[in-house]
Image: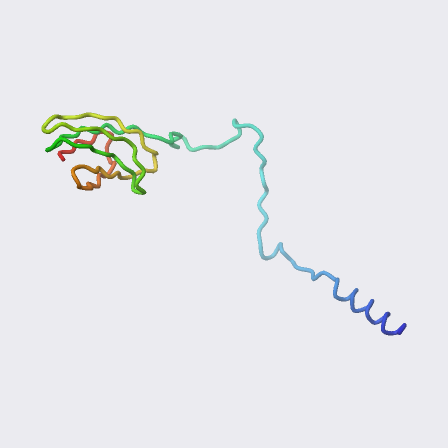
Amino acid sequence: MKNLFLLMIIIFLISCQKESTNLSSTVPVQPVQIIVKTEQLKVSSNFNWKTIKDIKFSLLGTVDGLVEIKSSNNDTYQRAYLKKDQSYMMIVTVPTYETLVHIVYNNKDIVVNLNSNNINQNL
C-alpha cells in the first residue's frame, strides 16, 4: 500500500511538469504602446470622422401615392406623399457606409446608388 501511494505521487508530479516552449523563435513580440490621451492617437489626415451623410432627393411621380426611401435591409429612412407630375424634394440622412437605397413607389422597387449627394429620380 505504501508503495502504491508513493507511485501515485511520483506519477502526479511527473504529469504536472510544464513543457518548455521557445516562443521567441516562432512569434515576434511587438512592443505595446498604451494610449492614455486622445492627443496621442495617430490618425490619417484624410480619415472621415462622419458617421452619417445627407442625400438630397428630387423626385417626380407619375401618380399620386406614397414613396419610401429604404435601406438594403428594408429599414425606412423617410416617407412622403407624391402628387402626380409635381416635383418633390427631400433630404434623407443615411449612414456613411450605405452605398445604395431603395425607392419604393407605385408597387415598384427602384435601386439607387448613392454616388452623389444629389439624386434626381423620375418615378
